[in-house]
Image (cartoon, rainbow, N blue to C red; front, top):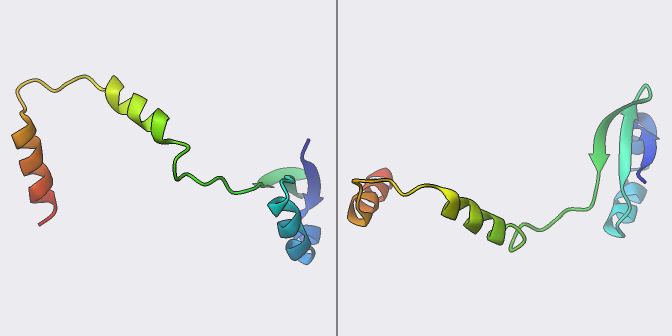
Length: 80
């Protein structure tokens, strides 16, 4: 469960909160009791999303009438 903390207190205790987040803790920051933000540990996207990205690309239907050379040409034009 996330710990709820008011925005004023979060501002005053930011260094302490960041150290806690580094250790895996999570906080929900509130304004007048209403949740407005979550302070959570950063997830490195370096390799975690690769399998999902590959699956999403494989799910796209093949475009008919466009060759690999055409696509390479389009990419080359975009780089100019």
